[in-house]
Image (cartoon, rainbow, N blue to C red):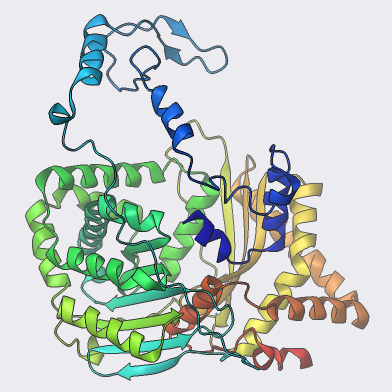
Length: 524
């Protein structure tokens, strides 16, 4: 699998590639292994070396580290720098006796669950790619099925020619965001699905396949990606687990407790992360704050989740995207598998979830303040969000990106380097579901009102700079932005992300970022 992964490894950004190679150069690899060394560590099967490693696993050659909330003994030592208490000592004799006994048992007496791995059913055996000469790759996917139940988009990989594919399934369901309680139950459900698939998906991960079940703005999102040969096998098991999930009491308690801790820990994140989440909640419809979700979590019972599970999968609309080393027939077969496994009822089009964002009235000025719950955090954070308009307006998008291009470096230099307002200082375009904005975020020990005043001062000053800017300098900035947006995608995953973004937001502007998408911008 390491050999296969290296052979079909996708390109990465140049900065990441050079950074990785620089680190590999510090390791004792032959120079001819610089590109493959970190991937092909095991180049041949050597049973003797494996046996030498196994021989090191013996009762007189190991240590145990125990981490526990409730330590039954006493702390004998304290770590020098952070004052962490700990203790260490000899392994108890009774435990050592059990260990020696375990090593001495015969094969028949061994614990059945401790065994060598079974055959991995996900190892790809068909890695052929039918490569053709394509003058101009297709810029967009095409719809191959569209009915009351499902809409399927498909694009055959005609750019990267790797034996891989990506499948994204959106289950549009208005039930999830009808209330904060439903959102919590949906989150618990997705966590339980992933928990149930943990052991099964381990083999898939080893064989280069990945999956995810999560929530998006319209309902559930299922993603499966990797080598296309066995992609349908993993997809089938994910769908069956979603459909037939047996919610166990012990796993429910663990997932619920874990989610509760995640909600509580939100208040202890860095302030700049928190303010960005608040902006999302304020601008997007059907979003619930962590506080609202945390309040309803204790009342959610296992029976409520079981009932919600049945309701959730009973009626929805499917939006599917298939991309990679597959053909139209494969896309239709995968669609049939999804429909036949889940068997949903048709969701009327009038009930499909609609993406909407808050439109700020002209001249409005809203301020929201919140007190940090972490008393040990001495920082403040401020996000100044400037509403621009609709994401559907290409000219507006181009001008907003241009503003980012012009102000990105000067804003950082003024607010971060010269005024030293804080370590976390950034600005740029901020998109919502249907709207576009521009924002400044600063985390600092200075109070938010002062931070806002410094951002306003920068905007006034830069307005004068922009007025005095020469046509040649402005043209250089414009050219730089055009080059950045016309940069070709480097791998299959990037192209999938670009296409799915247009499908999910329903703008279908697949050529945005290509020549036709920025032609109007060149005339600004």
